[in-house]
Image (cartoon, rainbow, N blue to C red; front, top):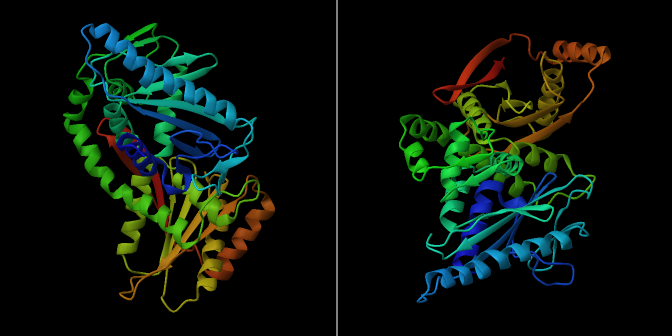
Length: 396
């Protein structure tokens, strides 16, 4: 890989995590499909990277045209070719020829195209936009580093691509990081207008705001969630989503990885705060995503089968709580033990909750003595000081 291709792949792994990021995937015939590929849920992001040095010429316009042709136009052509090829593929083919994650069905997938044009030194203007029926994003290596450095979860980055692709007007911008500043400043959306002219230096100005620095500081705890997802991927041998019948462990890591950065901050803080109590019991947290998580801590002498059964019962009862969504995930570990720790996960998906389920949940409370003495807290979490998000905590 070239240095730019390596940069793109490392940024992909940082934002989309290892299970869903691929360097130099292949077509079924063995030829290279693209430089990097991300498959997450029903979204596919295809990356083409061209690292082209801007050559000197007595006519700068000619030099610029040649660079755009090689760095932008050729990249766009590769993206469109990969898009056509992947339409008939059922799973990712890794660079070594082995099968990667299953691709979403053709009627459910949405494909994003992203060209990385490196080496232009920002001396040559270029633009992305529609190519036939496909929208091709075009950024340089500087902007991509800022984009994936800031939007460093699958949900955050894909939401940005969606917002940009749905913008109906014309965007005039030097350095896409400045467009990102507009998006963040306006509450992760773009203004409705025919012409959006983005001022140079908008990104630098945003980064200097105290609210931005405070947000970065608050987000540090959220990266514990990223590490936890990667731990589950490694410990449970979850190396790919296996199509229409994934295991519960695969479902768990996919749901956890779908949380955005703010939700990860909330969830990490709540879990770590509970672990710090060093006492048996559980804390239930409702994520802004709608998923409910049950963090359980158990005496070290409990068998893993016993604590999985107990956390499963808690998940079932939590599903019946008012306002709970259909998906509940249980994460179980030991109370503090200097010898080490282990994690178990439980996945529950119940789209329909009946009166009979209510009766069973009440019986589980009585039989197992769970959720008997419950305290509920409603906390407000500010992503930035002026923007509030909420979370609910209860424990027993």
